[in-house]
Length: 190
Length: 331
Image (cartoon, rainbow over all chains, first blue to last red; front, side, top):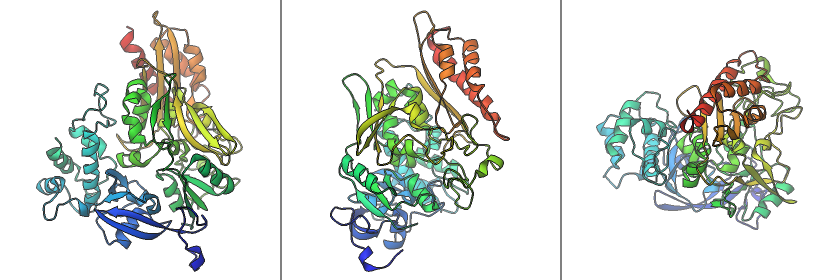
């Protein structure tokens, strides 16, 4: 981009001309606050990997099609490759690095190990963050494409294998570890 | 990606003003399609107007029983909303049949309506495309067009609109609310998207400087029978090859009292099957009547070299959905 200094004033927070190409953003990542001057073009995935050295979230397709970059923003799973960092002012980001409590693994991480739910491991951080989101969504009563019409709105949805497969369809695994991934999530689902 | 300015709009008026003053501005909601198109170089905005912080993130029942859905309500939240699941099952089903859990968590109601076609020629800046670059030609017409339109296409464009949600909104007689510097207006959801004609670069009836502020679903106090069914290449997370949304209410005598029928993935916009509806209204709700009406509608189809299968596929989906909706109340 143009590197002349007068192009780089913060904007978007009122006052400055909208012609500027960078803005100051404050966001929390795994509980730690960061205030950064961000190029508007920066997506969350690149911010995490390049600027914060959190390389757990992976760049697979970079177009929202593979799910390898999945993280949680304000507790909801999203594709970090499609989230402009500048749009996340005030948000809380949770990445795979933030799932464990010190040396105590998240139950899903433990289950992935116990079930051997990966081969190469490239999609695993995205699968884990996505599965964290799936558990929360099902607990909050969010239906899926395979949830029966009789399921009462607002009540938790039981996660059988069909539900887990449907809800994790946004996470591709080129090694084909799906059967073990489904088993691992089932182990943790209530 | 080209550098761009960024504005966090605090009010709808501020957003509309920014859009009016900057013809190269785009609204940013969930960004799930826009950011991707910016990476591909298809969209090159000079300014992004973020609408996520506008007070448009609620679903509310209006005094007349209709349901107003704010433009920034996320697809996942709309699909899960108890009133939507109870009264507009076709809408919930359509949303859940689209995209992935991650994308539905980010994608907004307004953004879903304004998403662009997934035609591979539109998304590849090295290829001709009249929608992306008017006058450059249509690569799909003689190229790969298995997923393209069979209804309402023009010499200039054979793209389809990719939304599932919009198909349900069309069948449900929803209206799209717009706000611009000239004030607010609303248009029927079934007429919000355009046919390509001579101007495929225009997807919708939205005017320069306008933004989508919401969608209003007409009152449906009892659980109005409606359903959405989608055929795709894999069981989940794929765009429709054909889809159907239908609303069907029968009279006490078992005749068709109210019907709304719309097809997805067949045209440049959700295809409201008005001919089929006219043929059905007041008549019997039988498989023969459904077949006659759907055939009447699909007679207008003009398949391309490689997508004739869509007509038969859409026919089968429509007959299945209508028969199912008529079934439980009638033998």
